Image 1: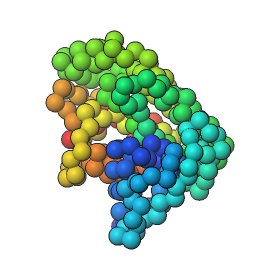
Image 2: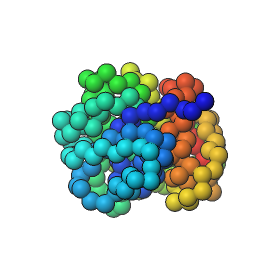
Image 3: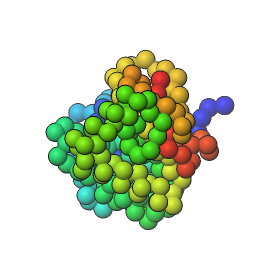
Length: 218
C-alpha cells in the first residue's frame, strides 16, 4: 500500500535541512507550501522530474498573514528553521508560537518541529554532555530560545512531534534512522539530512510519534 499523500507546510524551507525535506516530499508526490523570503533559487524549482508540487509564499516568519497563507490547505506542518552563525538572531520560540497560533486558527493539528540533540533533558554520553554544557555557556540566549521553542510545541495542544538530531551531515545516501525518547547520543552520533527528511515524512502518519521528543541518529 502506498503511503498517503499530504499537503505539507514547511517553515525553514531554504535551509539545508528544508531543502532535503522538500526534495523528499516532492519525490513522494506531496504538495509542499513553503514560506520564503525571496524568489531566489531553491531545490525543487524544476519540478518536471518529480511528481510533487511546490507552492511558494513570499514573506517573513514575523508576518501573520504570510504564515496563514503558507498554512492554507495543509494537513501537516514542519518547522525546520534554526539559528545560523554568528548566532545573533534569537527567533525560534517566537516564530514557532506564530506558526502554532496560525495552525490553531486554521484547524490544522499535526506539527513536527526539529530542534536538536543538545536541547532539554536527554540521554547523552559524558563527552557529549560536557560539549552540551559548553555550548549552553557559550550561547545561552540561543539555547534558551530553543528550549522555549520546545515548550511552545509541547504546550500547543496540537498533535506534535519534536525531532532532535545530533550533528547533521549532507550525506545523500538514505540510511535507517534510530529514534526513541531515550536514545543515547554521543560525540560521534550523526544523521544525514536526506535520511532525516525521509524519517520526518514517515513520522507524519506515525501514531507513536505524536506527543514524543524523539532523539534520532543513524
